[in-house]
Image (tube, rainbow over all chains, first blue to last red; front, side, top):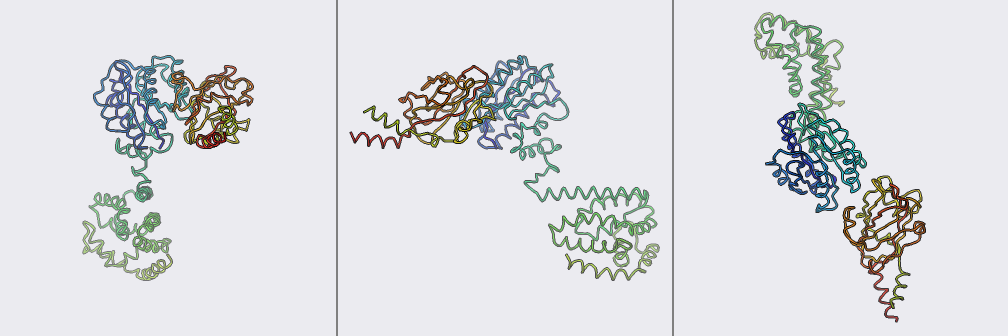
Length: 405
Length: 176
């Protein structure tokens, strides 16, 4: 939020025709300039930005420091490439333009895009740097484009001469897949000495590439903390679930887990989003092994006796987050967890539910390709009925757990 | 009459420290560790361990605005023998000067500091030039030994404020 007047020095020399920065060096530079102008004017409405070109026929000021973003962006159009960059003259003219700024309270800053070779002597650059420091002008250097021998050294020397308390920075941007502006967004040039511009930077990053984002999940925790939290939690659950699935897969590669997973997920109907990943996993396996459903179904049901322990762990992590937001959801979760905590050792509520024949038959009816009237399925259901007692115990427990919590 | 009014004003001169507008005080080419408050502020300036130091070269440009219009009578600049300031130019009511335009205007006064001055002897200024001062710019051009750094330990400004002086002045005139 520092009140600042900035002059941006653009390199529009012949070296900028090169395409090693997509689409061309000059275009990458123009994008970066647009972003910087936006960031500066947004971080403080009284900030002013001016632009000048260093090559061409000579140093030319395109727009004097102004807070009108439209004017600045407009002047970037129709720029011609040609000539050689005159770094020293460019910086000096920038300093002069800043001296005549309207609001004398603004801090002075020059941002230089050095894309072509630097033909000045190191001594001369150091003198310029000292003069800038004396007049308390900060300097940011973007070293990109041509990798001339000694260029880096000269620019570093210039920075050392100017730098006063780390207000000046240099950024070296090698050519590569990343756009120039994306690389710059994470540098102090954008973030303004470690504060201020991060919000804009995150938004710009999300808009620009859609890839690298300042914040996880592309959501700013400042703007929407609940959403950011929910996204983070679901990511963790997904990881936990994937680990569990990997474990299961390791234990029995060919077995079908759909039967076990689906009752578990339907039981937690309110948590469909979180269980959706698990069900989709299960459903994928379902489609693959549709042929031998009945045999596999039996295996799956047997498996589900062991499985719920794992899936309940996943539910445990969900509970703490969900109870914060939705009391009804919390209640449902508590019921399911109450069952699991009591019975994890031997029995699971899965088997209790499966003992409820009507429930099981309704589940089986919903499963694609399974006919409840199939004799093998009926036999299985009959075996389930031999465990009626544990179910009654289970009914008392959820109410106890509810009252406690 | 002028002598009497001069002596009356001389008696009434105060340290203008209280009338400095601190929000607008600026100093160009000062070192970040040894800054202007060390030389001007009450308490800091008395401490010989704290001083104002120049950074990139030996010149310093100080800008001191006042909360009201003042008349400047004399100035005390204390510093070390060799690195203390030598040629000091004062500009009245020139805002936001830079090193590039110090030579564009003639200074309101120039002080060539001697060793005694550096020990605390006040420099009497051309009073007529400083009758109506809203802001003061002090340009320290070089130092005693010509070294790369200039050090200043204390700067005190003596003078009077315009409003209060006028009342006293009127009274004196009526008496005679």
